[in-house]
Length: 419
Image 1 (tube, rainbow, N blue to C red):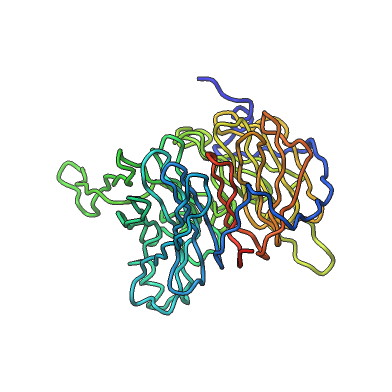
Image 2: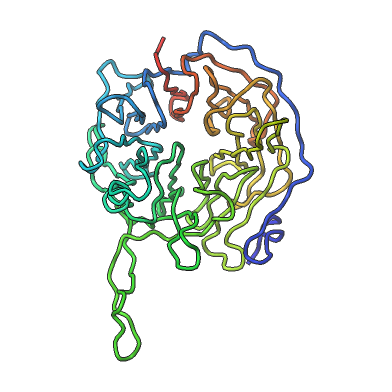
């Protein structure tokens, strides 16, 4: 077996951290806001948008919304040129137990299966008080993962799961991801329920079958030991988990990056961490990027910045954004593992509000939501920053939901009010 240079550095005590003390860094000047967005940027009227996903072959754009009245998802049909159809979008509600009617639910992440007409939706809700009957109802009956099939460019429910004490709630940011082969669905914000971990934070995944549906796993039935000391088993929809309680309270709201079903990177404070599900010696590792560190000021409490990551598995690079600050990094990746020195960039005057979205095409860029604008950072053929950047003005004080059509090379941006 061969290992990347980063893998070799990580092999220590099963949980390792590589601290980058030097990096290529530069600053980009504050780009003048362009009041007129180019044709490739499509502003979509979707107030309270939290997430978005587009599917070129199916010809639809789906935007998740919070506090948008009687609906949570807006489904737009696209014409052959990638423009929004003249027909009104379909408005859909997400399910919630009737007993939780006073606690609003909302979508946080949308992702399409890479080869099947399926959309995965991750939802959360305003948290009830601890110890109340409503909190028990959340654990007993609230389903975080919803699966919709796509037929004739319309969504139809085909699955509801991810319920129980393993699943944290009350979050404002979360992401899910499917590996490029469509064999595994990664999920955030879990609790590890082992006796000796006391419910600390974890990541999780469901393996997917040929229809893109989560596979149940065989679980021993408590108290079923027979005379030979063997358990009986039953099938349960239980995710595989990885304890990450030493990193942050409820992790992976800040993006996944997967090159295969076995290795997934996720964002954390000050950098990027990696979960190798087949590496028993070092299944969890992290790269700390000192250039991404936050700053404290007199009389203020220091808060470590969250790094929101993203990328395209076809590129040998993954990207990270400092949430609510102006720092961006790119770092080479080999089989999903970060390696070599990162390139850290500061976009003067920026205050990022979304993760990095890779836009492939004739002019490759990454798009990042900001305050009343979308930042576009140019990339070279190897996915590294060229030093060129522009900011497109949009009507949204905190741009969060963006999606890119590779077929049409269009960037869809959810705004509070379209021009």
